[in-house]
Amino acid sequence: MEKNTVIAIILSTLVIVLGFTLQAKLFPPQETAQAAPRSIEMVNEPVTEETLSGDTALVTAVDDTVITNEADSAATETIDTEEDAKNPVAEARYTIETDLVRVIFTNRGGDVVSYQLKEHRDNGDPIEMAYSHDDNRAFSLVLGQENGKVVDELFNVRKISDTAIGFYRTFSVRNADGTTSNFTLVKQYSFAPDDYLFELKVTIDGDETLKGLQFGNAAYSLRTSPQIGPEWDQKQDRYEYRKFYYLLDGKKKTVTLNQGNTKSISSRFTWSAMAGKYFTIVALPEIPIQGVTYSTISKDPKKPVSQMILVRAPVTGRQVTDTWRFYLGPRTERELARYNVATNNPYLLTDARLNEMVGSSGILAPLEFLLKAIMELFYKMIPNWGISILLMTILMRIVIFPLTKKSTEATLKMQEHAPKMQEIQAKYKNDPKKLNEEMAKFYQSSGYNPLSGCLPLVIQFPLIFAMYNLFNNYFEFRGAMFIPGWIPDLSRGDSLMQLPFLVPIVNWGELRLLPIIYVVSQLLFSKVTQTPTATAQKGSMKFMMYGMPLMFFFLFYNAPAGLLLYWTFSNILTLGQQVVINKMMHAKKELSLVSK
Image 1 (spheres, rainbow, N blue to C red):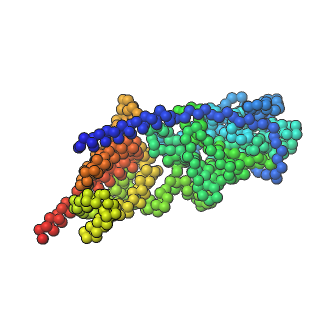
Image 2 (tube, helix red, strand yellow):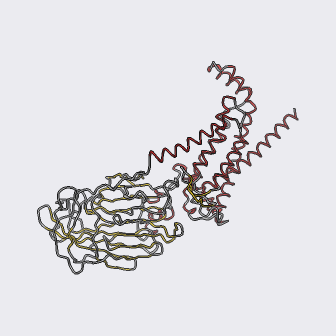
Image 3 (tube, rainbow, N blue to C red):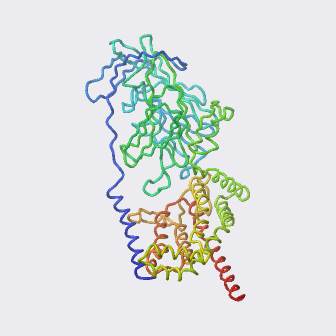
């Protein structure tokens, strides 16, 4: 290896390391404090729209509670009422369990403090879909717009059945005309035995004087879980993520937010969702929705937030029941497509189009679907997803072998003509026009097309992209073991051993073998396929040979094992194919010389 090449590799490594350092120093995780609650004037504003009606399940005459919210300026006008004996005196928790989920509620606000998926694991424990905080619980209500104070009072509880529970309490407000109105707030949760979707009914049941409910430009706001599982290290795992989605006018929209930001959508969407790579929470309102705010603001930088705050339009009558449906579960086509056909789900939903949230390869989706079907067929033959990946990779290398062979033949032909091409380039280096003319004549006389080696590679790109997306996102790889003690989970990086320290700058805490094998295979492949080049190009070519694999080592170190297993094994097979092709071409050349 030449001195200049070594220097180039060292400088490239320093640039990568320096880049990580500067990123950590100049752009640290934002420690943005939660925005101060907006003042919600707790004076009920007059509403002039037509009255809405709804069911009043669980409405019971209970004690009156003063609505109290902090205000930035003028004091909020409220009415003090006498505490009733029915008022709950202590916080309590209640559990509902189905075949698929285990949900824990608190009577403080009638909120959810834990929502576990029983069939899916995170480090041995059920996946948690409601990482609630004391001041930010899942499915909590704010009277008014999203930045108000969460309803934190203790509610009365009624257990309706093994899969349904209700929370209720009466509040009192002063209307804009100075009169007083009382209303009972009810939150009723209902679950199906074998479904990831549940219903939340929010009832406002007012007395005869209540003409509607409007604080600011909303009746109330409903918060989803501050964060969903599985847990992941944002600094190390660049393949996991949290994004927001919504379906508006039949088109899926995507919103990506860095921590410490918010974005509001003032549209009546069909559904709104927050999703990670493998799991999602989706809101399907059946009410006049005012909009949604997506928030990543957290008081604790160690607890990242990815939350939806759904804003309900003003209530225009004294009595209304809103039906919300929420899906908390796997982000898979099989589960989400159930809500497109009424007979496939207990809520008789049709054409909900939740399955559009499943990540795909866009226009390459049909190709990805075909590849997935083939891989699942291999899994039925040998029930190990790691082996399925290897068999799939072998099949793909066989399919594209003719293209690989043609590309190699073009490369070898270029090597054969390289001296003559370099001679022409040197002779006409000061006359670009003449150089182009002479090169065109040479290509025509020799029958060599410089693009003949590129076309087979271009044809392979759709297949490569589709396989990358499949292996990077396939749900069944979660928790799928390939080799015990080395690759226990194809959806995460492989691990030979835990390091007793974190590697500075990159914060690596595990020794991984697959990235090392990948880099070695890439170096060997580059060595086998290297071509003679002009002296001026030798430095850049050697950087491509040695520097690029080193860069990919840093990029792929924490890549999911399933994805890296594919890349590495594909490299090894391609290397073997290349050796065979080289021998075939060499034998063909010798035979040609003998025949002459």
